[in-house]
Length: 406
Image 1 (tube, rainbow, N blue to C red):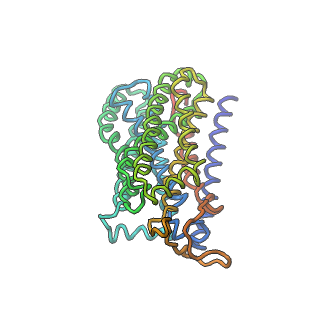
Image 2 (image 1 turned 120 degrees about the vertical axis):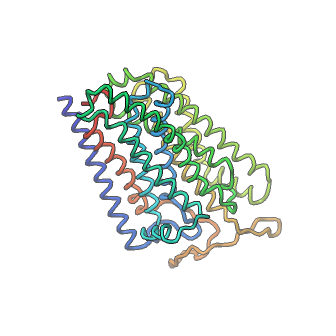
Image 3 (image 1 turned 45 degrees about the horizontal axis):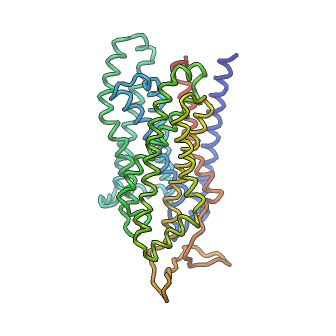
């Protein structure tokens, strides 16, 4: 009865993931037909939920490769039971990030122009290159971790030892790839010198810390959800080690988040004061959530040596929510700190920007756009999440992801 119950949960998760995908696809189809005006994106605010999700899933996709590479490069036996679930989680997340970026295009076929007429001077071009290469890295890692458990090789000790050596060698590629995918994608922001909130050399570095924190937390959450209580207890040393790595990454993320504020405050310009007002006043609640939620999780990860499954899962969820908020906060102050300004009578006057649509009773030109994802955006945004749920549930049905599974 117990195995049937577990099987039922996997099937229910698979169905839930499929339903989310169907809902997301239907909303996306509606968006393609009706146009991007069904979103709350406008000329003054061109990137929103989809682009924030793209960056978020990129970070989440890195965690599995970090776990995979760390386990084999340093021969950490406590982490090896988690490499399969970590690799599959990374593959599902990086595919989800690709879906999110396509959702942001008003017309998906526009992506063909990057192949037909590539602009090598554009950060987006290099994003596509590194993303494609990273998908290949994840696929190879998944294959390497799955093959030893196939019927052909399950009882072949020699093959397992040979495969472990292949994993170790491949980790020399996977480890830097997990960093590069975050560095290259974050340069899309850091190279935009007209946006003071983005134009920082720390953004790519902090992106790596965030990726390590949220990616490993996501891997921990997958393990906690799928592991039986006995397996969780038997592998608690590995979970504890992952939690400490995540805690160190969270500490680095929090420190760098405040360091990024210092040069903005130090400059003392009217533009800087306006940006700080946006960060700490207009979006102050979100800013402190992106700091405090991971901070609480960090404390739990550090002091909770004997944490049960529920608390470990809760801490992981706090990190995931906090870093998602951070990805959205990368956009909110930046777009509402319009770079076209003029000092008038000792005050900062912002040139209005056309919103790009005409709606009776609403402004055609604005200096601030109160962006919040529309209902259509939220439903479309469910698609990549549903994809991850579907892939992980399907993998749990098809493969032996953890030692206790048949």
